[in-house]
Image (tube, rainbow, N blue to C red; front, side):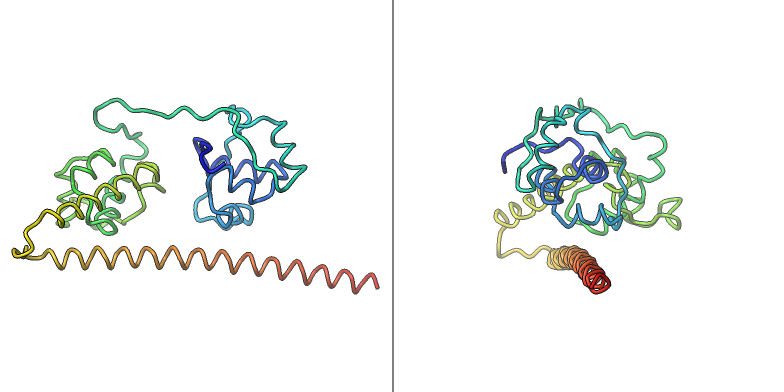
Length: 239
């Protein structure tokens, strides 16, 4: 089932399945391509981002019969009824709803801080902005710089996680290619500092992700212990 396509909106689909079915968290996580702790956090209302549920039955990705089959057997792996149609975009600048345009500077600032390896051209295409705006934010000469707060562009709805990951991977690959083809005897001023900054930012991101995962595990363990104690207390009262 590893090669099975995932729902078009995995987090929203998982939210709907948690709220509207009796499927096991592992089944939902496997079907949506998520980590089981993410699904657990949704169920416990501890997820950092709140998603509006998306009905996979209405979308044609699951059938009610398939859901019932999964509810009857916790070890059953759900099978997708119909793979989602990939949304493609024609060439040209990315369209951003008016309500989201004011968030662009925050998203740009987040990318500049967390992924300095991404070029201005890539940021411009990903967010749908101009290089002048990117340069102004980098140099802190933007007219609204005092109010700009770095925020994840995925959370802001400016791009998808898949698009961001693809750009990050492409930028990292470009850096490796440049290093392989460069003359080892010639040192580029400031290159070592840039590489050091990139490594520090990546290490910080990995640490934050690890801390979030550990927190979710602790919450899950605490909930299990609380349920166990409640069960033991109920047994003592009966006796």
